[in-house]
Image (cartoon, rainbow, N blue to C red):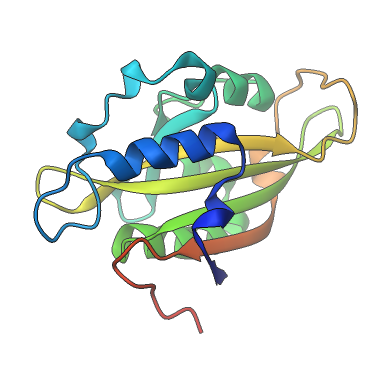
Length: 186
């Protein structure tokens, strides 16, 4: 895990636009993050929403995705809304992902996670996601606005075969200070 800057979040035009939307949301005095209810996810422009999703921290180590954009679902080859991602990704992958998510939810900070994926047809691609924290009604970071970009696809034609989530390799984990400092990652 390493630290980066705001520019690392701009993985695509959707990420830049959604960061600007997230940064413009109202915050109570002294709060680094906006509340989830301030984000009108359904009102996001379709050209950005297809790259977006929400993550909810349901419990220690239990992450659930919802409102997953069509481009992400098409790439993954299945709908993951409502599923426990930690269970789907497997223990080996989550030992790298959970510290990243713990830092984002706990500090709070923003972040970028890069996974090298493989689908059932053997096609590799990088699945890059960035995450912006959102507060619940008790002022705890419980939600993340996420944006995804698929890059470095080995084949010019994706086969539509489902991605083998438990076989992904974590390439990079970047934490970005949004005003609450960064956790100690040494």
